[in-house]
Amino acid sequence: MSFRVRVFALILLVAVAATAATAWLTLRQATSQLRESAAADRESATRITERLRAYGANHGTWDGIAPTVRALAEETGQRIRVGTDRQGQIADSDVLLGRDPRPGGTAPALLVDARPEPAFPSGFAIGSMRKVTPSVISKYGANVTYAACLTRAGHRITVLPGKFGIPLFRDGGRAPGGVPGAAPCAETASGSPSRADIAAAETCRAATKTEVLACLRRVFTERTAAVAPQPLTVRLGAVDDAGQSLAAGPTAVVAAGVAAAALACALLLSRAVLRPVRALTAASQGLGEGDLGRRVPASGRDEIGELGRSFNRMADSLQDSEERQRRLVGDIAHELRTPLANLRGYLEALQDGVLEADAELLDSLHEEVLLQQRIVDDLQDLALAEAGALTYHRRALDARELVEACRTAHSARAAAAGVALDVVGAGPGTVRLHGDPDRLRQALGNLVGNAVRHTAPAGGVVRLELTEEDGLVRIAVRDTGGGIPAADLPYLFDRFWRADAARGRATGGSGLGLSIARQIVADHDGLVEVTSEVGVGSVFTVVLPA
Image 1 (cartoon, rainbow, N blue to C red):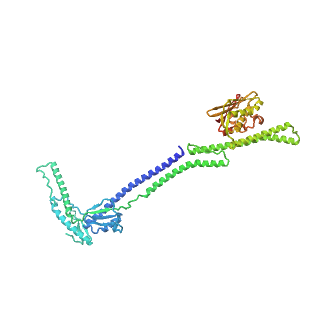
Image 2: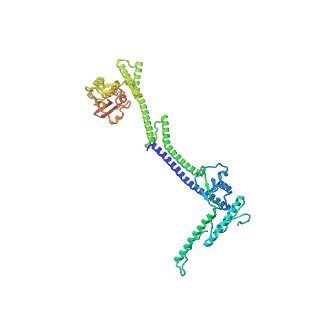
Image 3: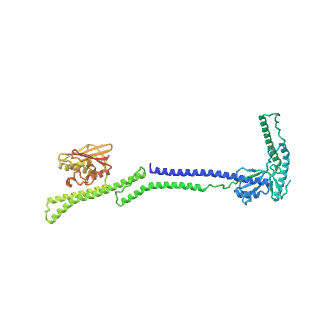
């Protein structure tokens, strides 16, 4: 899994977890608060209606209820408006508390009926109920009218429980003072009635009594409607009530938990990212200070692992380059030390008169100087080529002419060595190339020169083979020399390396020809291939794009 995908997955996990936790907390808290709010509203409504009903029952009127409404509004925090169908609005808590009246809420109005319900004893006869009901109505009408009068006059009223559930109102110790029957149930037969007959008679009497009681209550309510307090309409709430707010404690706890989880994930992510970054930083500082052996752990297949592997490859390349430079300096010193020491010895001998400057000695010294000059020139060409600063004059050219020119240039040397130099495949026609003809002749000449030197004994053959296939031009230099061991093939293009350590500078060249040839061919987008077999010979093939 790539590093980008891991980061995205981790961030997505944190976001989903945070969203789920927040949604769960909000839903749970909102549900709980709604339940609590609904229960509190029901409790407030019950409390308000009971207090208002008690006031109406105790005073026989709604006059003077404003202080009670104001006290209830202050205790419950609700806006309370009360009124009756006959009187209209009686009191508004906003007005009583000195506020501007607000628009009412959408909750349905509550009805508060302060009229008492008559309570007849269970053993009271139905006939007696019929006779008592008018007197009860008359007494309640007189008492409630008296209580309303006392209330309007500002008197205190004492309410005592009266007979049949009708309240008695007292002030200063002074006491102020039908319904057609249902059809009777059938009597049980004389003698020994059955259990079923007895049960049916009792059920009938109970049902009749229940109907009569409901009828008497309805009659009582209708007859007392003119004198009892009208049912009070109570409206609670306003459109801008704040209501209960969500508790901040649980939200803060869950938010802190989510933040802690996000922080932990961020720490893990930063640790996973910064650990290889710190290793890369330390290794790069070591490289800058010259410690080319520093490497970083490069496990994993993501971008961070690939970065570590790229750094290690770069460090390997730098270390190899440094090693090559050291070997180059050592090789150059080795190659120049001995001939310069010989030149110095001969010059000091001439200076001291030990030797005479004859023509043979001067020719030998001149040849040695030319060899050192060639080494220096080859080093300069190789340095320029590897730095990309070697000048090329590219143009269209014919590979056939290039091969023929190379054969002509080396035919004399080959003849002196007793080696036949042939060309194969350079017949009529044009094999087009694009490049610098002089540099390509230099590269090809280095290969031919090596082949001539290593083809022994006399009578050997060096063949130049030109072919064109699949958009590629191949120029092979094949010799019949002793061949190169397979173990030496990887080192052929190293500077100053010689397959035959017994060969000196005079017979083995400068040791830079193959390196220069490979670099020139590489600058022409080509490559040099080598195959060799000991005792048979070697083949160096230059492959260039047509």
